[in-house]
Length: 475
Ligand code: D5M
Ligand code: FE
Ligand code: ZN
Image 1: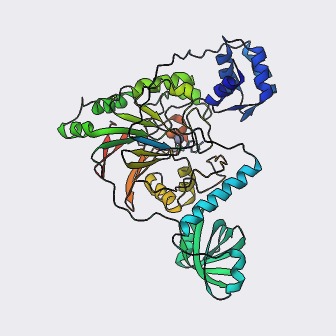
Image 2 (image 1 turned 45 degrees about the vertical axis):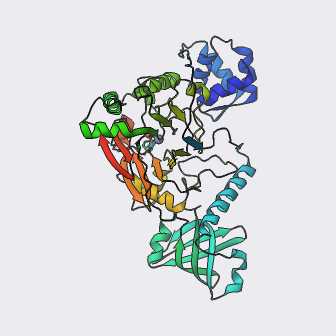
């Protein structure tokens, strides 16, 4: 087995491996047990880059442990992507994680977002503010450090030339307190005593648009968590039977016949080692086995329906966003009506633009903005659209890979914005864009019970002709 294959095999577990560790593995392992050994190493270590020492230790303990990894028998796949166009990071990642990458990443975020705000206001450089004493000014910058003083709030605004404090009184205080930091906004106000007294705070936001009308149907689902003990197999059976035209009254069977696409927004499988004690929640404890089962479950969807499959934080791919599509070894398991995409991904379905984003940042946004709640996840998604960024908060729970280009900027306004992750259901329209959070197929796990998370499983959002409806497959 060559170096690249070994590195790829680790990537399937979302892990990196040090070159010296690869060498050691090549010396020590024969072909027959390398897969099992890699599975064992990934199970027994937690570091992001697995070192030579860790591999040494794992080889020792492997000799006394029995591990089995199922043989993968890949199916022959021929893909057809006739009317589907995808834009995502797959095969285009530039990130090596050095300091220059972070600088380039933030530069790209600032450039892209400030260009969007500049469509709404002019804006002068922060360094030239001193020329405008007691005048009305317009400035575009990245938000830093929001402070609340009760009657008013103050935040810092930064561009490439400097930083200025912005004073937000009365009604603007509320808007200022909803700023998450690291988003780019425009401020209109008076420059006095070295700070701006704001009259308006402008988000990049999206322009009003007509609702897109297409005479075919799309089903939006998410968070199937195949392999979890709580995966709702019977409900899934009914759902796929509905798609096949085998259950339901005349009206819903007719709707099923219109469905051309099923879009899945990640957390396809439950994964392994995602949270402490997860082993007890799994029916399939091996990651390949989970994807084999996923492929089997997706095979129940009629073959003339295209399935757009994105990834989430439980999937076997790097955790940092933007995430590429599943690795080839796993993609091979699925039928050819499945199109694999990254997270996020812009997918054009016969002219309908769908932005798929798993939704990990929604946890951060819901925690930070008091008016938001898990019961209405689409409202948190609207906050992302307003900021034109899928993960406005840097450095909270959502890891971001510092790509040279910021893929998380919403640089194109989609017709549909689809997420999952929070396991609750919510749908709405914002300025003509359909915003969908499509819940889950996993009932409450012990872990979620402890965390007081109440999922709303088996709710399906169906788009048809500019309208959206909900089908429930739960008891
Ligand atoms: O996430 C499902 C939901 O559960 C999502 O809202 C995040 C939440 N979650 C998951 N793990 C944790 C921890 N450790 N603390 C708090 N909230 C959590 P999923 O990606 O399916 O696990
Ligand atoms: Fe999930
Ligand atoms: Zn998730």
